[in-house]
Length: 111
Length: 119
Image (tube, each protein chain N blue to C red):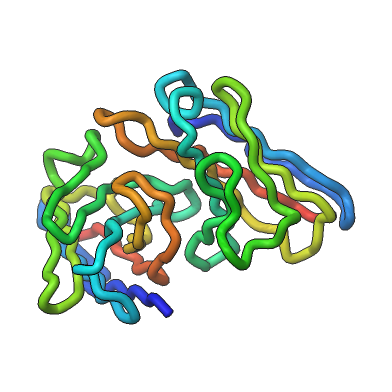
């Protein structure tokens, strides 16, 4: 059982927007602005899409955005494209004892 | 361009020690950043194992801490993972990575290497 809770799957049609939630506690997501999101295509290494809740690394499309409210972080993908179909994982700093926790992952299907 | 490449045995026997090395190119480990290991059991999610700074400071997942050692060799520009007393539950793809802080985010990943624990 993962420390952070994500929906197992989400889907959307090309051009639509979707949001993936990542729910933790005040000891991780809610306690620090250190939430990151990773995209993983089958058989590939994950790729950083969002860090520090809402920052985008250079080269990542501005269709990807992140936010946080309380103990829940969210990843929003606008203007869905076929290439966005992948697994998405959230990750949070969880303090000096636990350190880092991941979500269980969400499979995004582009219909 | 920063590149990371994992190497090590793909098959380890139960109760033995898993050993992997990550060779870094395109960036000197001594220049900064943190370096870490993440694993992913087949068909499952990601699990953070731990990270290290070039000075040798280490940060481990508490659930693995008693079995994990991460070390760095700046002269070879590489870092290593040792996981002792392995069981089938340690079968996973192991990724090495570069982290901006001790806890992430992870901006560069290796391609990953599958390690199977089986007799």
